[in-house]
Length: 136
Ligand SMILES: [Zn+2]
Image (cartoon, rainbow, N blue to C red; front, side, top):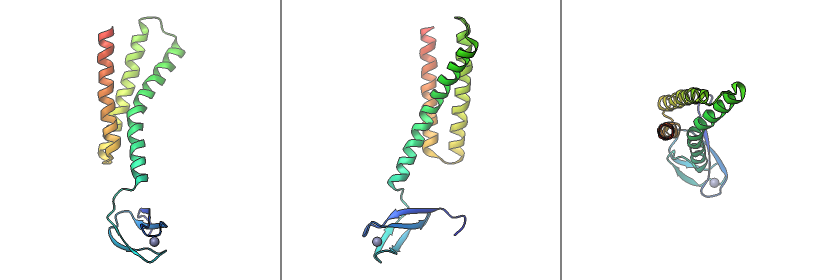
């Protein structure tokens, strides 16, 4: 079975772990209790949790990157009042590049939570720029 992905599900009859192929579907015999159960390849709760974490990651990692890079540049170069704007723009650029690559990667890999999170993050970045423009 080399190369094929396996998923572990719980038998609905005895609750024991049953290993199935990732794309398998249909009726299966539980190797533990011998009962039949239906499996249609639906995502299990653990997959949903992983998806949710991925979604959160793609939303928050760009802003964490933005804050970290800005903080690093400010503490290394200790800019005076107006130079801070320059570093702000550089940090935003890094953040935008990262988010766009994340969205492209998510799109290519058909990784929906990654793509949705990255797109949401782009919207959030845009709103942040807009609000900063209003403030300056
Ligand atoms: Zn069973």
